Structure formats: structure tokens, C-alpha cells
Amino acid sequence: MSISTVNPTSGKTEIIIDPHTPSEVDARITEAAAAAEILRNTEFAQRAEWMRAAAAILDDQAEGLGELITIEMGKPIAQSVAEVEKSAKAMRYYAEHSEAFLADVELDDPSTVNASRAWTRYEPLGVVLAVMPWNYPLWQVIRFAAPALMAGNAGLLKHASNVPQAALFLDTLFERAGFPKGSFRTLLIGGNSVASVIADPRVRAVTLTGSEPAGRSVAAVAGDHVKKAVLELGGSDPFIVLPSANVRAAATTAVRARINNNGQSCIAGKRFIVHTDVYDAFAAEFAKQMSELVVGNPLLPETQVGPVATEAGRQDLIDLVEDARERGATILTGGSVPDLPGWFYTPTVIADLPDDARLVQEEAFGPVASLYRATDADDAIRIANQTTFGLSSAVWTEDPAEEAYFVEKLDAGAVFVNGMTISYQELPFGGIKRSGFGRELAAVGQREFCNLKTVWKA
Ligand code: NAP
Image 1: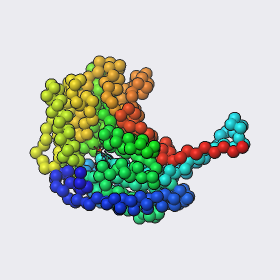
Image 2 (image 1 turned 90 degrees about the horizontal axis):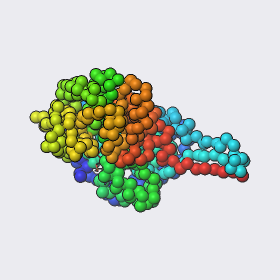
Image 3 (image 1 turned 120 degrees about the horizontal axis):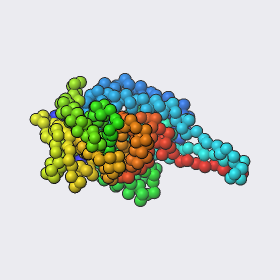
Image 4 (image 1 turned 60 degrees about the vertical axis):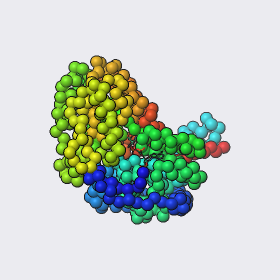
């Protein structure tokens, strides 16, 4: 894949960028390794000052950066600007909390281990490679970079090939804010050049957010070289509605959960599993609201759904919907390509999916929702847990016993009750099963890229 900006709203190629040569990549790894040595010897207060300065750059440029994000990957402009603001907030959060998150922990009674004192300390690993997706071109990177740099690591970014302008902005951001040269650099390389970077002895760990095939290949290389890996992969999150819930509110939130980011969020509600007693009411309201969404140019403030980010991504969506249609599923709304340039797809709701439809197992990365009728709570859990994914989930109920049952039984990295899944810097984020392993965000996400060193003293 070439490294280029193809505006998904027009389908036009705006910029093509030459990839880095192997010697340019090598020079950047050398710089990062040197920066890592400096960073591990700086105080938290110094790193925090630089991190706050980087956050201020984002705040200052929020409008322009938002526009750049929308041009490169097509999300509605208000969501792009919100992404910039959310990223700046996370940078300030780690500037403020990292010292406490990574503080030494003393063993209360060292005599139990025959010591006068025993404690643990968190130390940076060194250079960490981040392989990142295009769907949140800034937020996905910052939620790695802010905790990693605040812990004293240096970062290398291999961004998705369709967001090179975001990648180039990030290439200089931290240096502009005062961080030592090389603390965070972009590598303009394709996915096929990632293995040699992971293999480089100066690179100590890798984190990937993206699809399952990419995760599998990165984890295999990391395993070969016995290097730490964190994987944040796909999801096909269940959104469950039970009879005690406010069905209308659930339907309204379900629409937001499905179409946020033009439907291209790993933690979007994708499979809507509704108890048979309220199924018809939910289906009617949900399909009505999905059909009324304003689809169009994402730079216009009234637009609610912009294009799919790539032509190939839209084709995947078309294939999933046509497979369901051919197998006898019912299209309640949508299921077509609107008469617009670029890579648009009409917001779609599909019901009556047979078990062999691809949509039952596969992730729909765009504004396509699947509806399932559950006969009771056990049936809802069966449907929810039947995919190979386990990222997040949502359940709508006003019954405390039912809530406890679903919180326990859902096979996922998170459960949101009476709401939709959102990532918060304060909450650990990550999945189980084929949605990956490891966690991002909060204290636990920062500690993923530290050496937890145990110290014992006689
Ligand atoms: P993708 O194709 O896997 O791309 C993600 C990144 O991996 C890109 O930088 C890509 O580079 C790189 N890559 C692709 N194949 C690779 C390989 N074999 N070796 C090394 N790197 C490779 O993912 P996508 O389809 O663009 O993004 C959507 C997916 O990401 C969805 O499945 C979504 O659910 C998931 N996602 C997960 C999370 C989460 O936190 N769990 C968050 C956001 C998105 P190129 O662009 O150069 O191919």
C-alpha cells in the first residue's frame, strides 16, 4: 500500500509520500535509543512539563488538526476536534499522575522474606514501537505515547499508511514541546517492514492497535524475539437490551454507539441483542433513527455520518451486507451505496441473520448494525459470547440481579451498563479472546511498558 492521503469524501489522492529508506529508519532508531537513555534519567517533573507543552500545542491547533483528521479519514469534523481535545486531556492526565502510578511499593513486613527491606520499582524499558490504525489517528497514538514517554521510554510510530499527514505531525510534536531529539519519531514504512524494526535489538517492546491478521503477525515476530507485546485488536461488541430498560433511550444510544466515527470504532456496539418482549419496539425505533441520519460531507457541521475511510473498507462492508442478504436476512434500512463521490455507505440495520451469515462472526467496520432476538437472558449471553472477539460490551437493564448476571457472564474486557462503551483515560482498556491482550490507559496501561524490578535487601 502506498503511503498517501486519499480523501475518502472525494476519492481523490491528495498527497503521496515517499517511505523512509532502511538507512533513514536505522537513523531514527539510533536517535530513539539515545533519547531513551536521556529520558530514563530525567525527573518526572521535567517530563511532565514537556508533556503539558505538547498538550498545549494540540489545544492551540485543535481546529486545524481536526480538519486534517477529517480530510484524511472522513470522520465528522466535530468528532475530529473532540479527538484532539481528548488527546490533550490524556497528556495532562499522565503528566499529573505518572509519578504516583510508578512510585515504589514497599513490602509491609519484609521479615516474611528474610529481608530488612523489600520493594518494587518501575523502570522504563527503552525504545517501544507502536503500530497504529487510522480510525483515531491522533488519540490512538497519544494514548500510547503519553504514558510511555512519561514512564521514561522513547517511542517509534509506524502509523497506518492512509494517514501520513497525522503521522508527520506526530513526528515533530514532542520535540517541539521540549522533549529530547528522538524521543518520539515516525517511521514512514509499510506493514511489511515492521518485522525488521521489532527484531532490532534496540527496540524493546511493541504495541499494535489494528486488525487480527496484523496483530497475529506482529505478535509472532515479537514472540520470535522474546519481546513484550500488547495487542488491541478488533471487536464485534454486543449491545444488549432487556425488558426492564428504557427502550427508547437504549435505541437512541444504540444509534450513537453504532455510527460514532462513521461506524469505524473497535468498541462500537455492532451486534444489538434485544429481548423478545421489547424487540419489535426497539427494532422500529432503532431503524427509524438510523434511516434519519444525515450522511454527507464530514466537514459540514450538520453531517452525522461521513464516508468509510478507504475504498477497500467500504467493499468489505458491501460484501458483508450482500452475504447476509443472499442468505435471507432482512434489511430494515440501508444496505446500499448512496449516490455520492467517495466511499460512502448508507446507515444499515439488518435483522433475521442466519447463523452462517458472515456478519454473525465478523466485524462490520462501518455504519452497519446487526439485530438479534433473544428469548431470555441466557439466550442473550449465548449470542453475545458466540463470536471470537471479546473487546467490550453494553447491557441495558434496570434490574440489579440481571445487571450482576450480565456483568459476570459477558466474555469481554469491559461491560458498560445503561450506556455505550467509551474509552476514558482513567479506565483500563483492552480485550480478551481474539480482541487481544494487555491493557492501555489508566495506571495499568502505563505499567505495560515498564520493568517491574523487585529489590531485596538483607
Ligand atoms: P490494520 O490493517 O491491522 O492496520 C493497523 C496497523 O497495522 C497499520 O499501521 C497497518 O499498516 C499495520 N499493519 C497491517 N498489517 C500489518 C502486518 N502484517 N505487520 C505489521 N503491521 C501491519 O487495521 P485497520 O483495518 O486499518 O484498522 C481497523 C482495525 O483496528 C479494526 O479491526 C478495529 O477494530 C481495530 N481497532 C482496534 C482498537 C482497539 O483498541 N482494540 C482500536 C482501533 C481499531 P498499513 O496501514 O501500512 O497497512
